[in-house]
Image: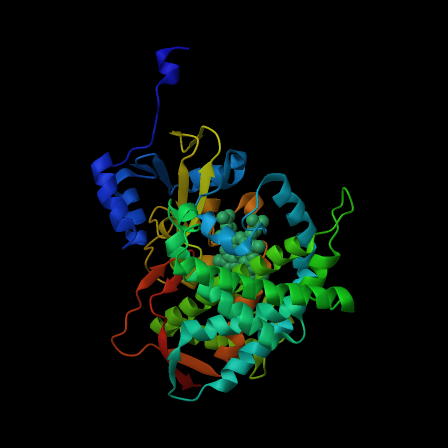
Length: 448
Ligand code: HEM
């Protein structure tokens, strides 16, 4: 082989010393660390900390390579270890043939007609929230949206008798997800085995989660089809060999849908109420659409398709505040992205947050303009300039569910209420696996 052929073409990046000091800062300010890596080194940047190689990818074409055309060169990143502790081997955390088989079996539960059926709980629990607040009341919007979307996905999964089970699952998941920072680092697998209090609590919460889930699974097996997602998981059969899932697999998939299905949408909704509160002209157009489509009545699932501007507001909010702010992978063989070498074992971090704010694809990127998502407005923009739901084989299975839920919740609540941020409050970003507002988002309810 010629010297030219073996010459490496690794992405540019900081020296090992600079990388170390940046790595330490990563824990204090993850978003800024990623933004800075691209500002300094361009579309594909590399940081090395000892044996850990992290490659940051921002160019839409390189993102597309990672998630679509070269997806076979990647698995989920090591950071998913923290999620595996909670979710086991569900859709989000499994790989290869097993993932494909599970995806094939679960996909029918997310067909358009099925999703339309989940519209009823979406509206019901939004109306319940709307009836629970008083004019002038100050409350934490993030918590309120978490509770609302948890009930919605709880009913979609379990259909009946959900109140107690949903609360228990919600509490266990919330406690477990607040531990993510401890396990979301290269020492996570080691820490998870130590006899320390956090592991005792983790095991207790996992046992609680398992107790609710296995009880629900037993009940569902006894009663037969309840018309909900859990019934579909239990009835699903592999088209090749005709076998279904074990109780443990159903448990892992159901917990996965619970988690993936509520926190993301809750953050999208929280940020949407925030952006609406900051842009009166957009809020006025949103109200005008509600008046035109609903004429004062509560929404019905079929109104979703008519609430076109509401959907654009949600889309523009997810551009600036993508609920899943990085989509991360590990290279399982030597490969390339954006023309640069990516060595086997490298952790690849693509950032929706960075690409969604890139002035090359978005004119005046910090301006809030829902019209960017009007039909035809995005012509010429690369496909992966906007990818809040990921892409390729691992595209969010709940995307249709999430759009409908987001729009119907906004419509059902927005009919009766508008919200303001207390004067002087500027929300800070809290980027975990999802992008939350730090310490919640205080808002004040104003009757319309
Ligand atoms: C605004 C709301 C949502 C956002 C922004 C979102 C975002 C995402 C993203 C970016 C991925 C890909 C992750 C990766 O490739 O590493 C994903 C995967 C997934 N999402 Fe969502 N999601 C949302 C709502 C939902 C809902 C409502 C459900 C279910 C009810 C759901 C279930 C899943 C599942 C199961 C996966 C894994 C799919 C697979 O790998 O086959 N998500 N989501």
